[in-house]
Length: 326
Image 1: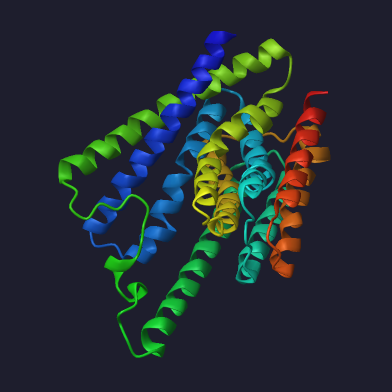
Image 2: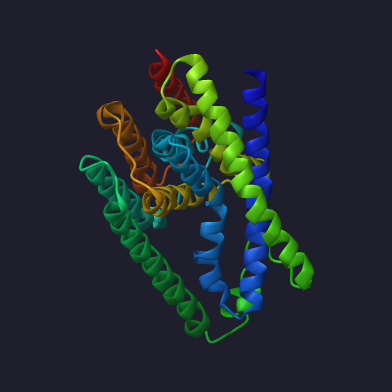
């Protein structure tokens, strides 16, 4: 079993670093090809940061463990809310902007669509196309809002000095203005090779652990794999909390959950069908939905997530995980 845990750790490390390399390479290549930074931020960066979860889901389906793929997404969405928001709140209060109300409702709509399709399961390519259509609508909505906000700033105050008015001024993850072509190629190659290798190590180790412990692939996906693939988001929010910049946490979590439901499962179903275990229909999907709905209290009251609320989120997650194993 030690070897299996070593495979899981090695897989997670590879996924984190390969995913980061892929984002850097893809972002810089896109900008060099003349794609507007606004579009790059909404598509290339968003898809790139979800690449580890996507590769894990695809590898799980190819490895005849589709329940692990589904558990990874459902568990990641639950962990993103209860863990990724709960732990930083113990460091400093996480402010919540009421302007996130529309994004919150988009996440709830995606959650409702996903659960509805799950009850019509198994999830097939037809369900996947519906999810991807929802993703396309979400991206178009985000682009339209960002464009309108940008135009209001640039034209409304009669100046073009604001960074939003200049593509070069938009901050994107992984941008290196003077990066060379060979370095872009190296980043892309590292991502293309490292992601599938890391995904295979993680999935194979997780399936072996599930067999050894006598639990289902779905449970391992909901817990071990889900928490592992949520570690980059957790690290980002903890670092932001330490810098007293935790305000970005809520937006990151909502965006990540949207991509998990619509993009990752949408693409994964094109690889193969994903059966939905009965226990997920009875419990796990509803836990994910309840955790998502819980954010509505903070969004509509504008209250920050204090250490008491963060502790409550962590206790809820602990109770959920204990229930899964017992």
